[in-house]
Length: 247
Length: 226
Image (cartoon, rainbow over all chains, first blue to last red; front, side, top):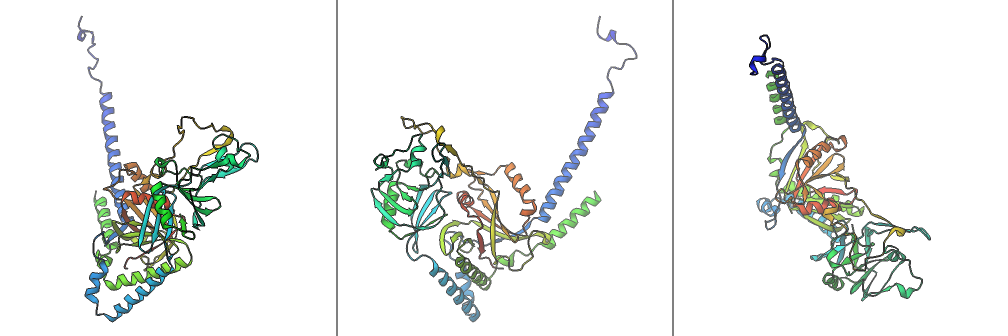
């Protein structure tokens, strides 16, 4: 028996219900589409109206002549401008006079960079490592706590030591899961600080490292680690009294 | 659709009305530039006396320079600069004619940086591996604080300096559509609703360096002719 023969005469072959539902669905989708499109248009228009009316400012790119030179030649004869020019130059000179006279060291903790600057410009730029920010808590004993951060502020080189010896403090043992020794001789480390140490006070130093491959990462206990070649150059350029600005 | 067209036309007219001419400061002459420099140096002298951190934006030198008092810390190259006011005179902060040469203080980064620090308890630390293997290598600055493609340094008083990482160099920055939507959404917050804007385009690496190391409450001085 075929399937057609089983159908009753009054039974519709296709139901109208799903078609109506599809039509209603399309209408709802169309309304939603129009609403979303309108929102988008309104949003863009609103953002444009309430946004900023930005106008470009000429920027001098490397190698271009200063903008002011072109203007100077046009109006050089104007006495008011001459007066203004000399007043600005005088003000700029007094600002420059306030800058440090000789060399100074700048350390950017967040980007692990060190520069030696002077009036001549940048004399040395080095990738360094600064404080990790790790907090070490002593679970027993005195229950002390240390935060390994490089301090920000204006310091200076207090002294410089060649082939420095490090007398390891308690935290250096605790952070390795060991107990601090009682004898000072067990704390002496002759290699970790490299060829030079520049003392900044309160135990902070700029010194060398055994882990040059990790330079550029924040991993120290607060000191500033410098690669061997850069440290040699730094030791040549700096001297006790050299300002160190850390930010 | 008639109302829609009328509304759009009205808005377009408002935009045109609020627009200033392109040459207003783009073609500023020697005098305007000298006056801007004069105001900037006076502000720099005041800030140096107060020994605070401040940025100096000098489009004519192509630099944004960070100072600690009178000490130059770091100079960032600038590729493009644009300035403007929010349309229809809206935005946080009082109206002022001299906003381009004013001294702005109280910087705040948007999005802010959240740095997480490890905490070690001495009891739970394992002795070092005798083979020299390291169990934890700290992230690089880029990994620890990824650079947003676009961030804003808001200053109290209603100025926002929008720093955009150059589109030619955005491989290490968060510049996807979600980042853009997030940035736009944050700008709608009342505290970020600045009245004045300086947009600065910088190389991505430099923008990232500035984002990570900008000290809290930095001031700003710009050498931009009125």
